[in-house]
Image (cartoon, rainbow, N blue to C red; front, side, top):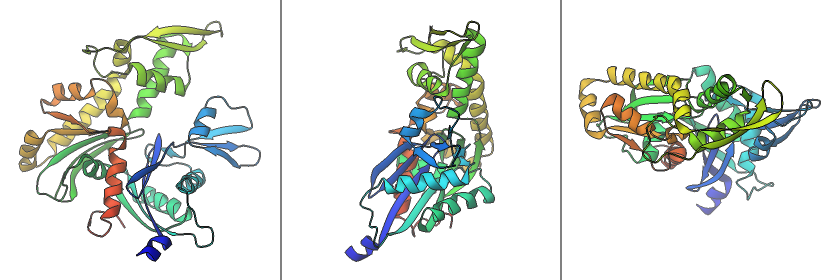
Length: 340
C-alpha cells in the first residue's frame, strides 16, 4: 500500500469561478482565487491565485488578468490548464523522478453541457490527471453538509457560488430535479459597481465591490445586528478626483434585490417540479444553503419568508462543496453518480 500511494496521488478539486479549493488527504491544501496574470507580449503566465488577484485592476498595458472560469465553466482553456497544474504543484512533495499518477474528482455545475464537461476533463488531463471523475455541485454540497444522499429521502440544496446558483432536490444518490441559473456572487459584485456609478457618481473596481459585499452586503433591509457603515474609496466621475463616501447595508440590500429575486424564483420553480412524496420530505427537512453567496446577511431569513420552510445554513458554506468532493474521492467506486 505504501508503494501504491507513492505512485498515485488522489485529489479533489472544487473548480470555482471565484476560488479554487484542492483537498488532499482530507485536508484543504490549496484555497486560491481562480485568476491568472498574463504578459501580453509573450503570452506567458506570470502569476496566479492570490498574487494575480493583487494585480487585478492595477495592471499596465503589457499585463492582463484573466479569470479562466466564467459562470462555473472553463472560458479560457489554456489559462485553466496552467492554473490547475500550478495549484497541484502547491500541494508539495512532488516527486520529479517518478511523478505520481493523479486521480481526481472535480465538481461542476449541474446545468453545464457535455462540451463544457469535456473541457473540464481535458484541462485536468492536460494538467497530469490519469483518472478523472466529475460530480455535480449540488450533490457535492449535499455530501459536504453531511446529508446521506443514498437514502430514499428528499433534500433540497441551494448552492450560491461565484458564477452559478444551483437549486437541486437530491434523493437515492441522484439529482431528482435541478435548476441552474447563471446569477450568483459575481452578479452581486457587478450590481454594486453599477449602483455606485449611478447613485453616487463614483467609479469603483471589482475588488472594492467585493469588499463592500463582505462588509455591508445584505439580503434584507431590517437586520437585527446591522454592520457599521463602510467607507468606500473610488474615482469621482464628474471631477476624476479620488473620493470617499459611506454606504450602509440597507442600500446594498436594495441594490442586490433584483439578483436575489431571480434566485428565489429558481427555488420556487424547483419546488414546483418536485414530486409530491419528496415535497413531503422537504417540508420536514427544510432547505440547505451552501456556497459563498449564502453568506450574505439575512439570506437564509429571506428564503424562509419566501418559502415558509426551515432554512439551514451549512457549516462553513464556502467549503461545503469542496468537502463533499473530498468525500466523493474517498468513495470513488462506491458512488455510482460520479460522471466518468
